[in-house]
Structure formats: C-alpha cells, structure tokens
Length: 191
Image (cartoon, rainbow, N blue to C red):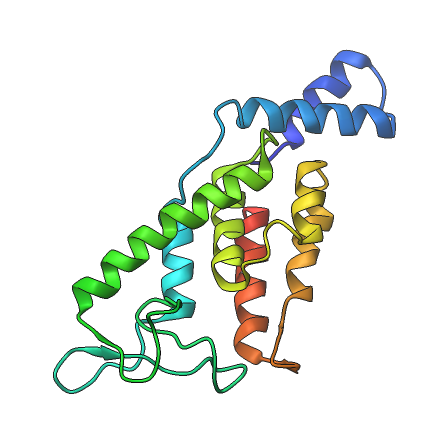
C-alpha cells in the first residue's frame, strides 16, 4: 500500500511536518486498520512461493515421486513431494501426485496454525503471513526466529532483513536458500 497520500493529507491538516514518533504512530494505526481481521490461512501467493522452491521433485518415469535426501545434508531429513518430511519418509518411499498434493494441503494447514499461534494478535497482512509460513515450512523456526519477534513489535523493515540470515544448511551457504529468502523478503514487504 502506498502510504504517501495519507501522510501528505495529515501533513496538510497539521500544517507542518511529522515528528518521528508521529510517523511511527500513524504507521501503526494504518497497519492495525489493515490487519483488523487476523490472517490465519496461507494465501495463493504463499502457496505458489512454496511450490516454486520446494518443487515436486524426483518424479519417476511412471509418474510417481520418490523420496530424496536433504540437499543441505545429503541425508536426513528425507523429503518427498512438495517438501514433505517425517518419520515415515525415507529411502524407498514412493507417492502419487495426489498423495503429494494432499500432504501439502495438510502441512500448510499445520504450518499456518503454528505461524498464527507464534504471531498471536500482532497485526499481520496476508503477504506477510504468506512469507512467514513459507519461511516456517522450510526452516521450522517461526518460534525462535528474531524476525518473528521483530514482526510482533511492528518493525517490519528490520524483520524483512532477517530472512537473509537463514541461508545455511549442513554448515554451507546454499544458493537455493539465498533465492528463497530473497523471494520471501520481497513477498513479506509486499513489493
């Protein structure tokens, strides 16, 4: 949302420029108005981002999908479909496309609920929620991430910068994680 027209109108009403505290107060009021209803489900933009980066990889000639080791570690956690992991997934696990899609739907509901719980009643726009669910889907770190605390404080600019800190797996910087965190930050900012 372009906030400039709002600030320009208030500036004209005041007949002067803003103090820093006033800018922050107006920003908070706009955020609260936009987030009157808490977002609790991932939207299409978030689903598309997750699918883009997770892919539905390792499709066999028969159309089924097989599990593969984590790209960062070369071992656990084994992954299948749209990034599904868990104790029942390992070498030799094979799913149909329907199984991959059903598991994604179940996982998205679960991860959305975890993000909603971690955020509490913090004002959150749909694009921010989508980015945070994608982040949590990939890292499982929504409760401990500094970006969550910054979001809850309303410091969205600094929170967006935090995505870029989560680019390592297995002790290595992974280009795929760099690209994903950049995409999540763009979505989070609403760019």
